[in-house]
Length: 401
Image 1: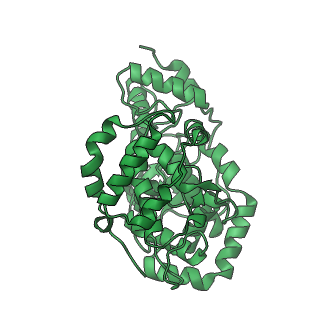
Image 2: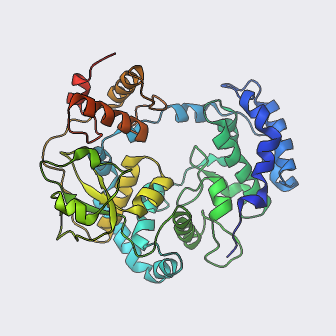
Image 3: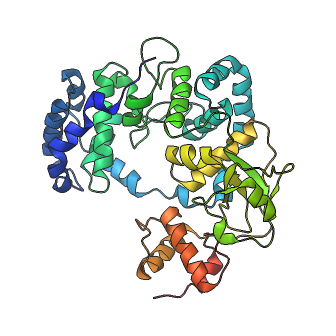
Protein backbone atom coordinates (compact mmCIF):
# COMPACT_ATOMS: atom_id res chain seq x y z
CA UNK A 1 0.00 0.00 0.00
CA UNK A 2 1.29 3.46 -0.90
CA UNK A 3 0.26 6.61 0.91
CA UNK A 4 0.95 10.24 0.05
CA UNK A 5 0.88 13.43 2.12
CA UNK A 6 0.11 16.95 1.02
CA UNK A 7 3.79 17.86 1.34
CA UNK A 8 4.60 15.34 -1.40
CA UNK A 9 3.02 17.45 -4.08
CA UNK A 10 3.68 20.96 -2.88
CA UNK A 11 0.24 22.54 -2.73
CA UNK A 12 1.69 25.21 -0.47
CA UNK A 13 4.18 26.08 -3.17
CA UNK A 14 1.40 26.38 -5.74
CA UNK A 15 -0.69 28.64 -3.54
CA UNK A 16 2.30 30.76 -2.67
CA UNK A 17 3.17 31.16 -6.34
CA UNK A 18 -0.34 31.84 -7.55
CA UNK A 19 -2.29 33.14 -4.58
CA UNK A 20 -2.17 36.79 -5.60
CA UNK A 21 -3.17 35.98 -9.17
CA UNK A 22 -6.00 33.68 -8.07
CA UNK A 23 -7.89 36.50 -6.41
CA UNK A 24 -8.25 38.41 -9.69
CA UNK A 25 -7.64 35.75 -12.35
CA UNK A 26 -11.00 34.11 -12.99
CA UNK A 27 -13.79 34.48 -15.50
CA UNK A 28 -17.31 33.46 -16.39
CA UNK A 29 -16.69 32.72 -20.06
CA UNK A 30 -14.02 31.31 -22.36
CA UNK A 31 -12.36 34.72 -22.57
CA UNK A 32 -9.05 34.52 -20.74
CA UNK A 33 -9.27 30.74 -20.21
CA UNK A 34 -6.19 29.84 -22.26
CA UNK A 35 -4.15 32.48 -20.47
CA UNK A 36 -5.23 30.97 -17.17
CA UNK A 37 -4.15 27.49 -18.34
CA UNK A 38 -0.73 28.85 -19.35
CA UNK A 39 -0.29 30.39 -15.90
CA UNK A 40 -1.56 27.27 -14.15
CA UNK A 41 0.84 25.09 -16.14
CA UNK A 42 3.74 27.19 -14.85
CA UNK A 43 2.51 27.06 -11.27
CA UNK A 44 1.94 23.28 -11.44
CA UNK A 45 5.48 22.80 -12.77
CA UNK A 46 6.82 24.91 -9.90
CA UNK A 47 4.87 22.66 -7.50
CA UNK A 48 6.62 19.57 -8.89
CA UNK A 49 4.33 18.26 -11.62
CA UNK A 50 6.40 16.63 -14.38
CA UNK A 51 6.06 16.79 -18.14
CA UNK A 52 3.72 13.80 -18.29
CA UNK A 53 1.30 15.46 -15.88
CA UNK A 54 1.54 18.86 -17.56
CA UNK A 55 0.76 17.29 -20.94
CA UNK A 56 -2.77 16.53 -19.68
CA UNK A 57 -3.50 20.25 -20.18
CA UNK A 58 -2.67 20.11 -23.89
CA UNK A 59 -5.66 21.01 -26.04
CA UNK A 60 -8.01 21.57 -23.09
CA UNK A 61 -10.95 23.86 -23.93
CA UNK A 62 -13.46 25.74 -21.79
CA UNK A 63 -16.65 23.73 -21.17
CA UNK A 64 -19.80 25.92 -20.88
CA UNK A 65 -21.94 22.83 -20.18
CA UNK A 66 -20.03 22.21 -16.96
CA UNK A 67 -20.86 25.70 -15.69
CA UNK A 68 -24.55 25.12 -16.45
CA UNK A 69 -24.49 21.95 -14.37
CA UNK A 70 -22.74 23.73 -11.52
CA UNK A 71 -25.47 26.36 -11.44
CA UNK A 72 -28.36 23.91 -11.68
CA UNK A 73 -27.96 21.86 -8.48
CA UNK A 74 -31.19 21.62 -6.50
CA UNK A 75 -31.49 17.93 -5.60
CA UNK A 76 -30.29 18.56 -2.03
CA UNK A 77 -33.17 20.97 -1.53
CA UNK A 78 -35.51 18.00 -1.28
CA UNK A 79 -36.70 17.02 2.18
CA UNK A 80 -35.18 13.99 3.84
CA UNK A 81 -38.28 11.87 3.22
CA UNK A 82 -38.37 12.90 -0.43
CA UNK A 83 -34.68 12.25 -0.93
CA UNK A 84 -34.59 8.90 0.87
CA UNK A 85 -37.66 7.68 -1.03
CA UNK A 86 -35.70 8.34 -4.21
CA UNK A 87 -32.35 6.96 -3.04
CA UNK A 88 -33.15 4.09 -0.64
CA UNK A 89 -34.83 1.69 -3.04
CA UNK A 90 -35.61 -1.98 -2.43
CA UNK A 91 -33.15 -2.76 -5.20
CA UNK A 92 -30.30 -0.93 -3.47
CA UNK A 93 -31.07 -2.54 -0.12
CA UNK A 94 -31.22 -6.06 -1.57
CA UNK A 95 -28.29 -5.63 -3.94
CA UNK A 96 -26.19 -4.02 -1.21
CA UNK A 97 -26.87 -6.91 1.17
CA UNK A 98 -26.07 -9.42 -1.59
CA UNK A 99 -22.78 -7.68 -2.40
CA UNK A 100 -21.85 -7.69 1.28
CA UNK A 101 -22.57 -11.41 1.51
CA UNK A 102 -20.81 -12.37 -1.75
CA UNK A 103 -17.68 -10.40 -0.88
CA UNK A 104 -17.51 -11.08 2.84
CA UNK A 105 -13.78 -11.82 2.75
CA UNK A 106 -12.99 -8.46 1.12
CA UNK A 107 -15.17 -6.39 3.45
CA UNK A 108 -13.94 -8.27 6.52
CA UNK A 109 -10.36 -7.51 5.49
CA UNK A 110 -11.17 -3.82 4.98
CA UNK A 111 -12.94 -3.60 8.33
CA UNK A 112 -10.07 -5.35 10.06
CA UNK A 113 -7.62 -2.79 8.68
CA UNK A 114 -9.71 0.39 8.88
CA UNK A 115 -12.56 -0.34 11.26
CA UNK A 116 -15.26 0.67 8.74
CA UNK A 117 -18.10 -1.85 8.24
CA UNK A 118 -18.88 -3.05 4.74
CA UNK A 119 -22.46 -1.78 4.78
CA UNK A 120 -21.22 1.79 5.27
CA UNK A 121 -18.95 1.56 2.21
CA UNK A 122 -21.55 -0.20 0.08
CA UNK A 123 -24.17 2.44 0.86
CA UNK A 124 -21.81 5.19 -0.34
CA UNK A 125 -21.06 3.10 -3.44
CA UNK A 126 -24.79 2.78 -4.13
CA UNK A 127 -25.33 6.52 -3.76
CA UNK A 128 -22.31 7.70 -5.70
CA UNK A 129 -22.46 5.45 -8.79
CA UNK A 130 -25.25 2.88 -8.30
CA UNK A 131 -22.66 0.15 -7.62
CA UNK A 132 -20.40 1.32 -10.44
CA UNK A 133 -23.06 1.48 -13.14
CA UNK A 134 -22.99 5.27 -13.50
CA UNK A 135 -19.48 6.59 -12.93
CA UNK A 136 -19.91 9.42 -15.44
CA UNK A 137 -18.23 10.10 -18.75
CA UNK A 138 -17.08 13.71 -18.46
CA UNK A 139 -13.39 14.32 -19.12
CA UNK A 140 -11.90 15.11 -15.72
CA UNK A 141 -9.18 17.58 -16.74
CA UNK A 142 -11.35 19.87 -18.93
CA UNK A 143 -14.14 19.82 -16.33
CA UNK A 144 -11.82 20.77 -13.49
CA UNK A 145 -9.97 23.35 -15.57
CA UNK A 146 -13.29 25.04 -16.41
CA UNK A 147 -14.38 25.09 -12.76
CA UNK A 148 -10.92 26.27 -11.68
CA UNK A 149 -11.24 29.27 -14.02
CA UNK A 150 -14.84 30.01 -12.99
CA UNK A 151 -15.20 32.74 -10.36
CA UNK A 152 -17.61 30.84 -8.12
CA UNK A 153 -15.18 28.46 -6.37
CA UNK A 154 -11.77 28.77 -8.05
CA UNK A 155 -9.64 27.89 -5.01
CA UNK A 156 -11.43 24.59 -4.48
CA UNK A 157 -11.11 23.45 -8.05
CA UNK A 158 -7.57 24.67 -8.63
CA UNK A 159 -6.30 22.32 -5.95
CA UNK A 160 -8.42 19.55 -7.50
CA UNK A 161 -6.97 20.26 -10.94
CA UNK A 162 -3.47 20.06 -9.49
CA UNK A 163 -4.38 16.74 -7.88
CA UNK A 164 -5.61 15.40 -11.21
CA UNK A 165 -2.35 16.34 -12.90
CA UNK A 166 -0.42 14.57 -10.16
CA UNK A 167 -2.50 11.39 -10.50
CA UNK A 168 -1.67 11.25 -14.19
CA UNK A 169 1.93 12.26 -13.60
CA UNK A 170 2.65 9.42 -11.16
CA UNK A 171 0.95 6.76 -13.29
CA UNK A 172 -1.98 5.91 -11.03
CA UNK A 173 -4.37 6.75 -13.86
CA UNK A 174 -4.17 6.99 -17.62
CA UNK A 175 -6.10 9.74 -19.37
CA UNK A 176 -8.66 7.19 -20.57
CA UNK A 177 -9.49 6.49 -16.91
CA UNK A 178 -9.78 10.17 -16.06
CA UNK A 179 -13.44 10.41 -16.89
CA UNK A 180 -16.23 10.69 -14.35
CA UNK A 181 -18.75 13.12 -12.90
CA UNK A 182 -19.07 16.67 -14.21
CA UNK A 183 -17.37 18.17 -11.13
CA UNK A 184 -14.25 16.01 -11.48
CA UNK A 185 -15.10 13.04 -9.25
CA UNK A 186 -13.58 9.75 -10.38
CA UNK A 187 -14.35 6.09 -9.83
CA UNK A 188 -16.77 3.85 -7.99
CA UNK A 189 -16.97 6.07 -4.93
CA UNK A 190 -16.44 9.37 -6.76
CA UNK A 191 -13.24 10.71 -5.24
CA UNK A 192 -12.15 14.21 -6.11
CA UNK A 193 -8.54 14.14 -7.37
CA UNK A 194 -6.93 15.87 -4.38
CA UNK A 195 -8.49 13.36 -1.96
CA UNK A 196 -7.67 10.57 -4.43
CA UNK A 197 -4.00 11.56 -4.54
CA UNK A 198 -3.65 12.04 -0.80
CA UNK A 199 -5.73 9.15 0.53
CA UNK A 200 -6.40 6.37 -2.00
CA UNK A 201 -4.80 2.98 -1.34
CA UNK A 202 -3.69 0.04 -3.45
CA UNK A 203 -5.69 -2.72 -1.77
CA UNK A 204 -5.52 -5.30 -4.57
CA UNK A 205 -1.71 -5.15 -4.61
CA UNK A 206 -1.18 -4.44 -8.32
CA UNK A 207 1.02 -1.40 -7.71
CA UNK A 208 -1.58 1.18 -8.75
CA UNK A 209 -4.40 2.96 -6.96
CA UNK A 210 -7.17 2.67 -9.52
CA UNK A 211 -10.55 3.60 -8.07
CA UNK A 212 -12.24 3.18 -11.44
CA UNK A 213 -11.20 -0.34 -12.40
CA UNK A 214 -10.50 -1.90 -8.99
CA UNK A 215 -13.39 -2.42 -6.57
CA UNK A 216 -11.03 -3.46 -3.73
CA UNK A 217 -9.04 -0.24 -4.21
CA UNK A 218 -12.25 1.83 -4.32
CA UNK A 219 -13.79 0.28 -1.20
CA UNK A 220 -10.61 0.36 0.88
CA UNK A 221 -9.91 3.93 -0.22
CA UNK A 222 -13.38 4.93 0.90
CA UNK A 223 -12.61 3.41 4.29
CA UNK A 224 -9.25 5.20 4.45
CA UNK A 225 -10.94 8.53 3.71
CA UNK A 226 -13.53 7.98 6.44
CA UNK A 227 -10.73 7.20 8.91
CA UNK A 228 -8.97 10.39 7.82
CA UNK A 229 -12.22 12.23 8.56
CA UNK A 230 -12.32 10.77 12.08
CA UNK A 231 -14.07 7.40 11.85
CA UNK A 232 -13.81 5.40 15.09
CA UNK A 233 -13.77 1.62 14.81
CA UNK A 234 -16.46 -0.25 16.69
CA UNK A 235 -18.64 2.82 17.21
CA UNK A 236 -22.15 3.44 15.79
CA UNK A 237 -23.07 6.18 13.34
CA UNK A 238 -26.86 6.68 13.53
CA UNK A 239 -29.72 5.00 15.36
CA UNK A 240 -33.41 5.59 14.70
CA UNK A 241 -35.34 6.78 17.77
CA UNK A 242 -38.76 8.00 18.84
CA UNK A 243 -39.09 11.42 20.44
CA UNK A 244 -41.74 12.58 22.92
CA UNK A 245 -44.24 15.36 22.23
CA UNK A 246 -42.29 17.70 24.50
CA UNK A 247 -38.53 18.07 24.60
CA UNK A 248 -35.95 20.86 24.97
CA UNK A 249 -36.03 21.21 21.18
CA UNK A 250 -33.16 23.68 21.11
CA UNK A 251 -30.93 20.78 22.16
CA UNK A 252 -31.88 18.84 19.01
CA UNK A 253 -28.94 20.13 17.04
CA UNK A 254 -26.21 18.28 15.17
CA UNK A 255 -23.68 20.57 16.89
CA UNK A 256 -24.90 19.66 20.40
CA UNK A 257 -24.12 16.36 22.13
CA UNK A 258 -25.46 14.79 25.30
CA UNK A 259 -24.92 11.34 26.81
CA UNK A 260 -27.52 8.83 25.71
CA UNK A 261 -28.63 8.69 29.34
CA UNK A 262 -29.71 12.34 29.08
CA UNK A 263 -31.74 11.69 25.94
CA UNK A 264 -33.42 8.80 27.73
CA UNK A 265 -34.26 11.10 30.67
CA UNK A 266 -35.88 13.50 28.22
CA UNK A 267 -38.09 10.69 26.91
CA UNK A 268 -36.23 9.63 23.76
CA UNK A 269 -36.75 5.91 23.07
CA UNK A 270 -35.27 3.39 20.69
CA UNK A 271 -37.35 2.83 17.55
CA UNK A 272 -36.50 -0.87 17.41
CA UNK A 273 -35.62 -1.83 20.96
CA UNK A 274 -34.60 -0.26 24.23
CA UNK A 275 -32.24 2.71 24.00
CA UNK A 276 -29.18 2.25 26.17
CA UNK A 277 -28.90 4.86 28.94
CA UNK A 278 -25.11 5.15 29.00
CA UNK A 279 -22.53 7.91 28.59
CA UNK A 280 -22.00 7.57 24.84
CA UNK A 281 -22.23 11.10 23.33
CA UNK A 282 -24.95 11.62 20.75
CA UNK A 283 -26.75 14.41 18.94
CA UNK A 284 -30.48 14.33 18.29
CA UNK A 285 -30.86 14.54 14.52
CA UNK A 286 -34.26 15.71 13.32
CA UNK A 287 -33.86 16.02 9.54
CA UNK A 288 -37.45 17.30 9.19
CA UNK A 289 -38.00 18.81 12.60
CA UNK A 290 -39.81 17.59 15.70
CA UNK A 291 -42.69 15.89 13.82
CA UNK A 292 -40.60 13.96 11.29
CA UNK A 293 -38.13 11.06 11.45
CA UNK A 294 -35.66 11.08 14.34
CA UNK A 295 -32.18 9.64 14.89
CA UNK A 296 -29.42 9.76 17.42
CA UNK A 297 -26.30 10.74 15.51
CA UNK A 298 -22.96 9.64 16.92
CA UNK A 299 -19.48 11.01 16.33
CA UNK A 300 -18.90 8.78 13.31
CA UNK A 301 -21.80 10.62 11.69
CA UNK A 302 -21.03 14.14 12.85
CA UNK A 303 -17.40 13.84 11.73
CA UNK A 304 -16.83 11.22 9.02
CA UNK A 305 -20.20 11.29 7.27
CA UNK A 306 -20.52 15.06 7.18
CA UNK A 307 -16.97 15.44 5.91
CA UNK A 308 -17.65 12.94 3.12
CA UNK A 309 -20.61 15.09 2.07
CA UNK A 310 -21.63 18.18 4.03
CA UNK A 311 -25.25 17.95 2.88
CA UNK A 312 -27.26 16.83 5.91
CA UNK A 313 -29.93 15.29 3.67
CA UNK A 314 -27.36 13.27 1.70
CA UNK A 315 -25.38 12.11 4.74
CA UNK A 316 -28.46 11.17 6.77
CA UNK A 317 -29.87 9.18 3.86
CA UNK A 318 -26.56 7.42 3.18
CA UNK A 319 -26.26 6.51 6.86
CA UNK A 320 -29.85 5.26 6.88
CA UNK A 321 -29.28 3.11 3.77
CA UNK A 322 -26.29 1.46 5.46
CA UNK A 323 -28.52 0.42 8.36
CA UNK A 324 -31.08 -1.03 5.94
CA UNK A 325 -28.37 -3.03 4.15
CA UNK A 326 -27.38 -4.38 7.57
CA UNK A 327 -30.99 -5.47 8.19
CA UNK A 328 -32.68 -2.59 10.03
CA UNK A 329 -36.44 -2.08 9.48
CA UNK A 330 -37.94 0.73 7.42
CA UNK A 331 -37.97 4.06 9.24
CA UNK A 332 -41.00 5.81 10.68
CA UNK A 333 -42.03 9.02 8.86
CA UNK A 334 -42.70 10.65 12.24
CA UNK A 335 -45.68 11.60 14.32
CA UNK A 336 -47.37 14.15 12.03
CA UNK A 337 -47.48 15.56 8.52
CA UNK A 338 -44.57 17.90 7.82
CA UNK A 339 -44.89 20.51 5.07
CA UNK A 340 -41.36 21.07 3.73
CA UNK A 341 -40.28 24.08 1.73
CA UNK A 342 -39.61 23.89 -1.99
CA UNK A 343 -36.30 24.97 -3.53
CA UNK A 344 -37.71 28.42 -4.34
CA UNK A 345 -39.25 28.75 -0.87
CA UNK A 346 -35.91 27.94 0.76
CA UNK A 347 -34.27 30.68 -1.30
CA UNK A 348 -37.05 33.06 -0.23
CA UNK A 349 -36.46 32.06 3.40
CA UNK A 350 -32.73 32.63 3.07
CA UNK A 351 -33.27 36.08 1.59
CA UNK A 352 -35.53 37.00 4.52
CA UNK A 353 -33.01 35.68 7.02
CA UNK A 354 -30.24 37.72 5.37
CA UNK A 355 -32.44 40.82 5.55
CA UNK A 356 -32.78 40.17 9.29
CA UNK A 357 -29.02 40.14 9.74
CA UNK A 358 -28.28 36.41 9.60
CA UNK A 359 -25.32 34.94 7.72
CA UNK A 360 -26.66 31.97 5.77
CA UNK A 361 -23.75 31.78 3.35
CA UNK A 362 -24.82 31.50 -0.28
CA UNK A 363 -28.53 31.91 -1.03
CA UNK A 364 -28.66 28.53 -2.73
CA UNK A 365 -31.97 26.90 -1.83
CA UNK A 366 -30.30 24.36 0.48
CA UNK A 367 -30.87 23.93 4.19
CA UNK A 368 -27.25 23.95 5.27
CA UNK A 369 -25.89 24.42 8.76
CA UNK A 370 -25.88 28.21 8.61
CA UNK A 371 -29.47 28.39 7.40
CA UNK A 372 -30.63 25.95 10.08
CA UNK A 373 -28.82 27.96 12.76
CA UNK A 374 -30.56 31.13 11.58
CA UNK A 375 -33.93 29.34 11.58
CA UNK A 376 -33.30 28.18 15.13
CA UNK A 377 -32.52 31.72 16.25
CA UNK A 378 -35.75 33.00 14.71
CA UNK A 379 -37.78 30.14 16.21
CA UNK A 380 -36.48 31.09 19.65
CA UNK A 381 -37.33 34.74 19.01
CA UNK A 382 -40.84 33.80 17.88
CA UNK A 383 -41.45 31.39 20.77
CA UNK A 384 -41.66 28.36 18.46
CA UNK A 385 -40.13 24.93 19.25
CA UNK A 386 -36.52 25.51 18.23
CA UNK A 387 -35.97 22.36 16.17
CA UNK A 388 -34.04 24.25 13.42
CA UNK A 389 -36.36 23.02 10.66
CA UNK A 390 -38.38 25.53 8.60
CA UNK A 391 -41.79 24.40 7.43
CA UNK A 392 -44.24 26.19 5.16
CA UNK A 393 -46.08 27.33 8.30
CA UNK A 394 -42.87 28.80 9.72
CA UNK A 395 -42.10 30.70 6.53
CA UNK A 396 -45.62 32.13 6.42
CA UNK A 397 -45.34 33.26 10.07
CA UNK A 398 -41.79 34.63 9.88
CA UNK A 399 -41.83 38.43 10.34
CA UNK A 400 -40.29 40.27 7.38
CA UNK A 401 -37.74 43.03 7.82
